[in-house]
Image (cartoon, rainbow, N blue to C red):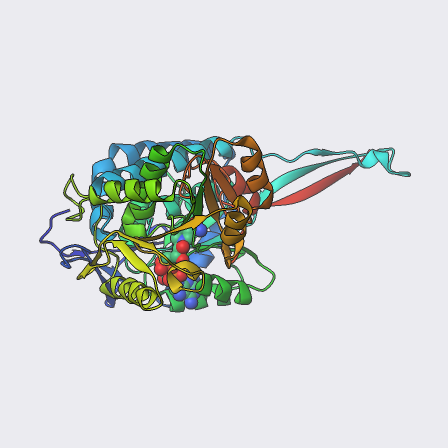
Length: 476
Ligand code: NAD
């Protein structure tokens, strides 16, 4: 993308690329330069997309064709890795090496979805086992839910869109994507790529504009059969309340915890915790926010995390050497700064970092925190990690569970019985042993409990959410 050109972007509805007079500017999060204007969709645009999506369902799109389109899209995405990565680096402020990683993972997500398209199946049901049903047989089939609205957040705007489009199309649905206002460019470019991959008209729409308006109009349209949302608990709850009897999948926030037990490989734990606390400037839903460390290894662990954190380089996301870019908005960096200041006033100690320059917030390590502080209790969604010593393993588990959230947790230990104890008692969607909370590969089931949401992603599991099971009974 030419750094001096403001692109007048089009949105994708009913197989057409549409411009509007009204638009929202998209900015390079490092230079603050405007890089594109995206259209603001209105209610008519929403209704047109929904009608087109509904009509498309009537046209044949076999599982094998879905496989071919998704596979082609995955290949095209890898071919254009650099283009997508530089858009991510600019619209999110995500370091270029991390951005390339997101493109590679997005291609994985589409490739896995392609494979899954070929193995969506029901099962035989032994109705003949019931008295009076001896002459009957039955089986189930998985049918698409229909028109699915997919609303996505700013922080992973390519792979999280693929986590909805991939399984949604694989399952035979029509998808209407509403990307985040701050980072809509990858989703639009992805729609172009699907067009090139041969996706039939009407199966995918990308609407840009204001979240609250588009959300309201999509919710009001009864031809939308399902909502799949990734974002904040506040908006997730809003959608759940208004979706009525329709299906809803919610992938929401977390204040992820990781336990480091005394028998762990402390160097390995320190490296992984550092990396997974500060990736994407901590703007990751499973970013490590709270670390509970056995008191015998606390000092050693803290020292090692500080050594690794000092090596991280803040800078222009397009620079190969950069580890941490700016936060998405100045106001988010200011919010993180105020939470850290408040924690310090309440007795926390800044071991490292704690300074803000514009939208950059230094990777920050806190100690002496208490559970009621915002930096522990709420989702920081910034580069701040708190490190807390424990004596009893049971206490550490209890502190992990003392949270409104429950997406994933990490545990470093080589003691199998402790790992099993944690697996049984930690209240999360996923426990990662000998890694930090922020481990994910794209085919695993992913989703939380409590305020972290309902329903799973990962193509195989998302397809379960995005299909209905229909029973067919044969009276022979
Ligand atoms: P957000 O909730 O502010 O926005 C998410 C999306 O919702 C955007 O597209 C936005 O335009 C739209 N939106 C806003 N108001 C709406 C409304 N009234 N109706 C319908 N849509 C509306 O979230 P964000 O700031 O973009 O993302 C950060 C949050 O996302 C964090 O809480 C993070 O933990 C969460 N997240 C979760 C996962 C996961 O898989 N669990 C992954 C990434 C991010």
